[in-house]
Length: 519
Image (tube, rainbow, N blue to C red; front, side, top):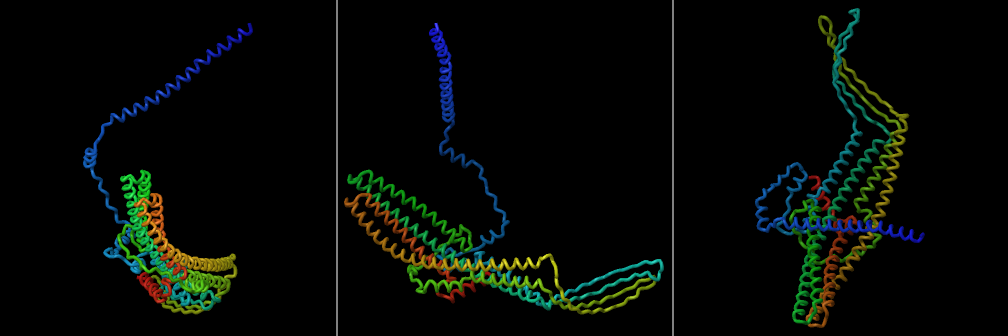
């Protein structure tokens, strides 16, 4: 009996589970069917849409109203000034002409020159303390007093000019220190102006050489495309003659496509380099101009001076270091000026006054004229000011120490800069020699590989490998020439020279930039 009951229970549980399983399978089938129906409906909607041929599209485009662009309002004087500048695009421009254009148009040097004008004004303000201060005034006072007794009632008018003169006779070096600081500030601004000229020349030279290298790389990319096309044609001809497999054609075709990709990249690099050069000379990026190629004889001779001696000379010639030295002297002068504020000052003065008095009564007025003159000498000492001047001196001393540490840091960085630029140029010269040899051997190897492939002595992989080496050799040769030019320019800049071993040219270019900036 017990077994029968258990069998019935198992049977009932199975019967209960079967509808649930069937319902789950049915729900999944219905869900999948709904998805299929939605996909079919989207396809039907797409098929029902009318097709428009190209002629109808062109007609529709023609019938659309043309939206004319509104002219830009001339509300930016700076951009108008940039657009008004003109450059000679009828002929290629040399590097010297581009530098001259940059000195005249780039706002970098003009900003540095305006900074010199600010420093000169500050020097004049400091020197004004050498002269006495004179003030004049005109006053008028009406005074009326009414008393119970008419005898004491007054009605007066006082008016007349007054002149005062004061002069600082002694302040224990404060006045002289402030003037010294202003003079050193002017020398610092002038050195920064000279450094701005050198920075601008370096930027122009770098942009010029990179623009030339980009043009050379574009020519090299076109030569690579020509070589790859020749290899592809050779592989196709051998395949048509039954002397090569389809794999050779595909390998040559992929190599040809890769050179086309590199060609487009080189075209973009030319446009980017042209915009960089236009920015360096102070023109808009879309300005059209051409450049002359630099001399074919690359400067490969490096100075035989010891690097240590070159660093010592650079310490004296670098204008940014000169500016920091002048800034340190300015800070030291301000320390002495702040010290003088803790001490008394001796002043002299004089004044003169002409006063007119007019007395009114019930009948008539009486006018009287007085002249007053005075002279004085005074000692002024601010004994307690809440420790303001003391903390002011502490601030000046801390700023002086900071300026000294900044000078140390800059001179250490200068030695590393000269050392690095010196050996960068030496390395670039050596790399140029090997890149020229590499290009010659790669060219010869490619010609032999192509002839051998046409004759059936070499495989397509050998030919493509030779062509890749030739492509790499062209790229390295162009890059090596650019490295030599830029390394030489950076070495001249690091040593504080506008042109290597040409002091007359240095002075002439600095004077040219100063005149342009002043104008």
